[in-house]
Length: 319
Length: 108
Image (cartoon, rainbow over all chains, first blue to last red; front, side, top):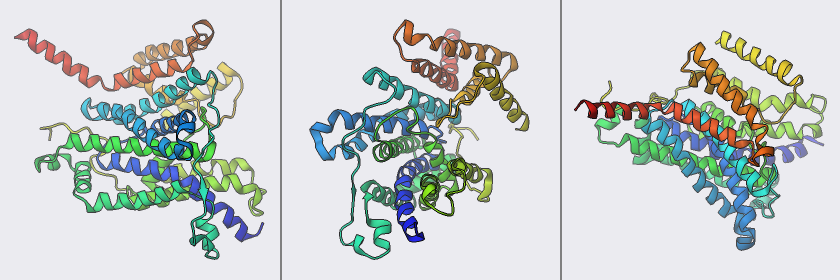
């Protein structure tokens, strides 16, 4: 394979691997910007992946080719409801947010597998008929070089993800809601003094993060695996969290970091076809995304300026 | 941090050498490390409490193996129970609030 052919293969794969990570990382951004740590992204993604596949299997005949998109909405709703649990524990009950997130992770995978075993009587679901379709963008895919790279055989969900990142940038930095969100995460007491309902903003943020993580999971399961089993989502939620920190809690930064992690995953899969990497043992390439995650989290990126009040429950009247 | 890493490594080696006698490479992790966090929390971060917490989790996990045969319930119900235990231990604050309210009423 020539270098250009490698590029044509790896870049589209990178974008399709990055799309779920972008959705989940943006979800985490909403939650963390409001001051609630959301380790539970992984569990919420699992829930989204499971609901997406389940909806797709059950309603494939009713909705036909629209099924995957409706399944995304169903996954969003269920994961958003599921994330209310985390919101109640960490905001109203003042639980340790990390511990509550871990509980969400365990609960998500356990409930999903439990339901799979009850419904299908085996460890994994059937394969879905309608996965998210690939298509060529009209006109644009005829541009030389850029066309085959970005606009041929792409998933619609990838464009959604990139659009979402820019939309989030607009919401967080240019709208009143975004300002409130950030002020609640930086200094909740000052925000409360100015008449902002801290609890309400935090609830909304956590529920948004749950919904987006659910969409992320459903995109992953409907583009990559096409069924649901115990290993459908393995570490993507944590990777999205790492991308969020890598991107310094900024939507566009998080998108860039998610693309980078997507590239690492794509490289691991396509290594056997690339001359330069064919002799590298595949194990090294498979651990690459995780090594990068550790390096990113271990402060390789320099000083990460997290929202100041992240991880602390807001207690009225406390100094 | 280093000490905690050393103990976690010891725990992992015990799991591999004693309980199973082999290492299976899997694409997803078994989650036993997360159970460790939960045990520490359940034992209120005291060495003696950890023993009780770990015994509870151990018996739950061991019992899970027989459940599909005896009662026809999938193993995952145990994970659900454990997750709920963690969840309620973590949100113990609300229970303390309820208790203090009850006491106030009695005092009146």
